Image 1 (cartoon, rainbow, N blue to C red):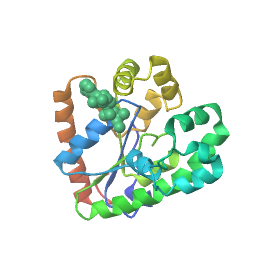
Image 2 (cartoon, rainbow, N blue to C red):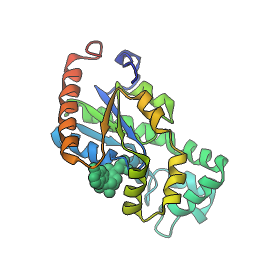
Image 3 (cartoon, helix red, strand yellow):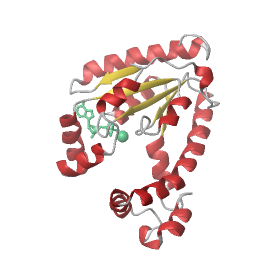
Image 4 (cartoon, rainbow, N blue to C red):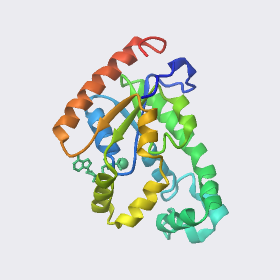
Length: 221
Ligand SMILES: Nc1ncnc2c1ncn2[C@@H]1O[C@H](COP(=O)(O)OP(=O)(O)O)[C@@H](O)[C@H]1O
Ligand SMILES: [Mg+2]
């Protein structure tokens, strides 16, 4: 597991920030919802990215300019299926999309986190690709990884989205390895079926984060 970095190295203005990550289908949404019900504030970068590419979203004008109106649906949203196919086929297109989205996501994330800090003891930033985008580690005080086996990931995503196993494997191959995530983790939640054990673990983590947040930025880590 990683050695916690001093909070003072972090540039975000928000209070105590936990970065929650994990592979597709690992259970990030489930764990973040559980922490939220205990009192944590959740800022979900997936939801932010989704809003930016919804009809009228701030990313839609630059996307239409760079990729053409073919990538915009009739109601003005990003054509996700089409963009997913292009991004898989073309690393350059993927980078172009990321260059549009990442700065917008960053600004919205920091604004939401700063706002959330006013009312919650700590903030959970849900960042699916936290490890992949290494610089995010400087923005969080603590890395929480949701972990399960690859077989479980594939089964859950198949059930959730109807993608076949091969399509899920392709997405997983573009993400950090399970070991790379575990190496970066300060805390790990194992999510393999037994949701009662998961709930107990989440309560203990919530208590820990409340204590660390109360201890202030220069102590407790
Ligand atoms: N322990 C579990 N047992 C059964 N189903 C689960 C469990 N954890 C998550 N799921 C289901 O698997 C899917 C993926 O979980 P989710 O929390 O959305 O993962 P992520 O946000 O990491 O992609 C969801 O449909 C969720 O309801
Ligand atoms: Mg999710």
